[in-house]
Length: 351
Image 1 (tube, rainbow, N blue to C red):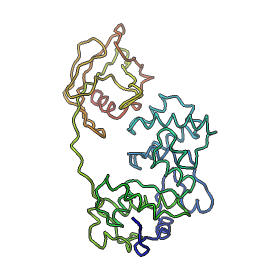
Image 2: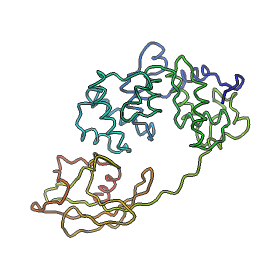
Image 3: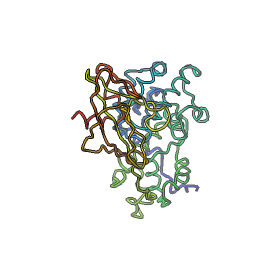
Image 4: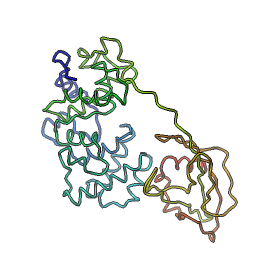
C-alpha cells in the first residue's frame, strides 16, 4: 500500500512535538541532548529493549537502574554469575530473556570487543534479538532509518490510516505503512517519538486527539472509528494447569530450594521444589515427611495458561536428606531472588 502525499503525516511535526514532550527514561538520551551531539549507549538501548519485551515501561525502570548500577558495562554483565543475573531478573518474567541476555553479553564481549553491530542483519544473529529488537537498536542507538513497530506504533498507524484488518493479521500491512513514514534524518528520535505518541496521546481507550500533532491526517478521527482501532482477534480462554509447591523449612531455618531446568518456563531460576504442572495435581514431594496442606491455592497467570498451585509444607530436622534440591541457610536464601509465582508461595506460608 502506497501512501498518497495528501494523506501522509509529516514526521517533522511529530519530531517537533517529541522535542517538547519526550518521556524521561533512564536509558534514553533526551532529544535536546541528542541534537547537541550526545550519543546513546548501545548497551543501554539493548538492555532496555530486551527488558521491555512483553513488559511495561513502569515495570522495567527499576530493573534497568538495578542492572546498570550492578553491571555498568557489557563486560561487567558478561562476567557476572548466572545465578546473580537470574536473581536480579526475578519478578520481571519471561525468563528466557535473562538467559539470552547473558549469552548475548558474553558473545559481544568476547567476539565483538564489546561493541554492538549497527546493521539489522548482524543484530539478528545475536541471541534473543528478533526483528523488532534489531530495528530498535539499529535505529535508536545508531540513528539508522529502520522502522520500529511495537504495539503503540501499530495503534497509531491503524488509526491514522483507518486500518480495520484485525491484529495479528494486520501486522504486515501496518509495518508497510509505518516504513513509508520513517525519515532518513533523526530516525532514532522518530522511532521513540511515535512510540511516545501511542503511549501518551493515541492511547487505547480514550485517545487525546485534540492535542495530537497528526490529528489533521488521521482518517479514523474523521470517520469516528478511532476508539475501535486497532481491531484484534478475540483471544481464546486460557487453560488452567495444576501443580504442588513444597515448602520445607529445616529446624535451623534453612529452606529447601531447587534450580529449575535450564530450558522451559522459569528456566534456570531459583525455586521452591514443585511437582509437574499439568491437568491435575500430581504429588511429587522432594522428601519424606508428614506433609500439611495450606488452605488457600496460590494462583498465577502466565502468558498461555493460568496456574493453580497447592502448597504443602513440613519442618525437617538436621538429619533428613531431600531426594532433590538443596537447603540454603538463612544468610544464603533471599526470597527476592524467586520468580513471582514462587514469591506468592513464600508469602502464603510466611505472611
